[in-house]
Length: 254
Image (cartoon, rainbow, N blue to C red; front, top):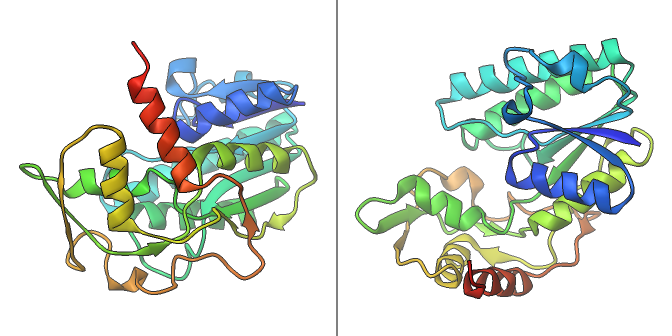
């Protein structure tokens, strides 16, 4: 199939493009560097010519809640409109487990707006909710880091490898629209602070981590809130395996 990937220059997007090629599909990367601006709506018509399926893996630049919702909303409206004009038969959206249950961050609000627009649109769709990615802990730490110290909540998560996310997205894109897909998660539960600490260590970074519920992610995410449902699909890669790959990548000569 000819499959367009929105957000192709990002971490998940680039892995998805590579996975599509491995599985014999014809990927169409869509990003500003490829001449496609989702928010402005430019370059979409040409990019979607002959496309069967669109995988939406976009993220948003750091901003407040209102700006993030506006960004995701504009990008999704333009994408769906262009898909309908091009005759795209399946829109696959990468989303977040329990995104409707908690307030979360500005990013969560933006993803909820995406889900609302996709589920109300005319293009047949599948929304795939994933748990947090393995690099989430280290990423959150960078949001609050100051003078070598970062503050983050000791959340319980069941994270997933980014490469496994890409594989699931390609598999879903290869089949018919399903509506809301069951949750997809990694095989083990972890503490977010410990994940951040171990990731920074694997990457050779020094950072002091302070567990607190007064950081960006608050008590509304505590307990089992971020965990997948009982019928979740479990991806194979463990956090230990992923960390080993990060350490190996750091050790390779550049």
